Length: 200
Image 1 (cartoon, rainbow, N blue to C red):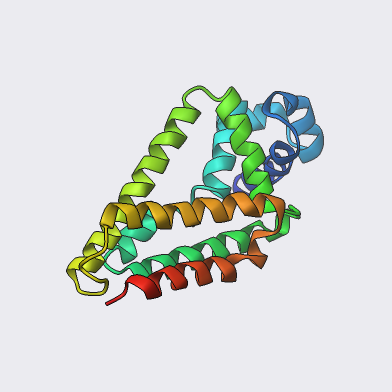
Image 2: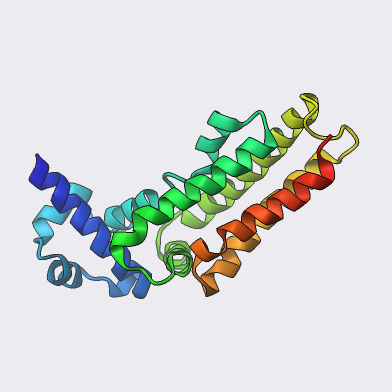
């Protein structure tokens, strides 16, 4: 059992590096076998096919610990706590990536998502729907924070939700050009600056 867990982790870690460096079609089973030392049969056992490996990489490294929907479940009634928890979860997720020696995790994510949009059926629509859900979450958190008295009652909830989401998306886009862990304090500063303008 332990051997199987280690093999699965090894496949995911090396596949992560390969998909971050090459486009989806260029990462062949032969390349995966050579890099991991694990047979194609074992990979199929764990993930069914190459698309399964690719999707597992996305879920494990990018849509897991820092998932904004999970943060909403835990801290959805306070904007301040919500964005602080989100930033901390991103920090924790980046720490998980350290053993894989990826120079720029945000650039890796950008490259992998670009491949996913081009080669994985339905991914583009799924990503768009995810952004819509995330926008609704920001607005819901802000609405609850207004109702609780944390934020001023005269703010435009929809516009403010879109602004906080734009700050988030802009940060991760900018970090495709630099290491994100160097900028998380700046992201928190951006959130805090906006928060100071709308708090009660």
